[in-house]
Image 1 (cartoon, one colour):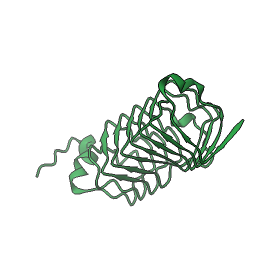
Image 2 (image 1 turned 180 degrees about the vertical axis):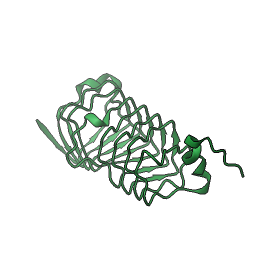
Image 3 (image 1 turned 30 degrees about the horizontal axis):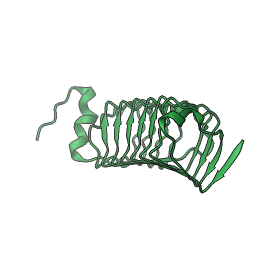
Image 4 (image 1 turned 180 degrees about the horizontal axis):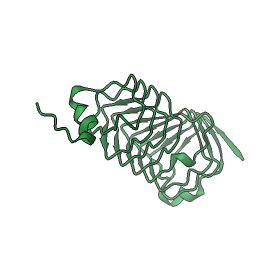
Amino acid sequence: MDYFFEKEFTFLTSDSNKIPKGEYEQCTFTKSTFSGSDLLECKFIECTFIDCEFTNTNLFKCAFQKVHFSGCKLTGLLFEHSDAFLFEVKFTKSTLQVCGFFQKIMKNTSFINSKLVEVDFTESNLTASLFEECELQHCIFDRTILENCNLSSSTGLIINPETNKIKGIKVSLQQLPGFLAQYGIDVEG
């Protein structure tokens, strides 16, 4: 397996299936397209993806350790298939659509100024994570650990307090309808 250290990459659509298998450490990927790519057993350590696009990318056994996605569009990614060892990601100004984090341990994960559409966090551990200025649309939180999370500046939050662990969660007054929706309570004012 190849090893790349402190390299800068740009993969175009035509190159997307030619991404070398290997370990990438402290590398930067800019305006790259990984749509339909196979990242099987690739390892990304302290890497940054800037303005990249991922659509239906195979993440099976792919490692993400201290990886930052900035301005990226991620569609149909199943992070639950990625390597769990030292999994750590951060999303800034990114869009995640129909992505899955089923049973993923994601403590202290940051989602900053991002849009999350139909993202599945079922049985994930998001303890002490930050959702700052995020737009949450139809996201699934089911048997999810959200203890000590800060969601106070995000919108579209719908969480069932009976099926999720929410001790210490920080939300705004405007988000209360998202907690009470299951009871048919309409909050006005």
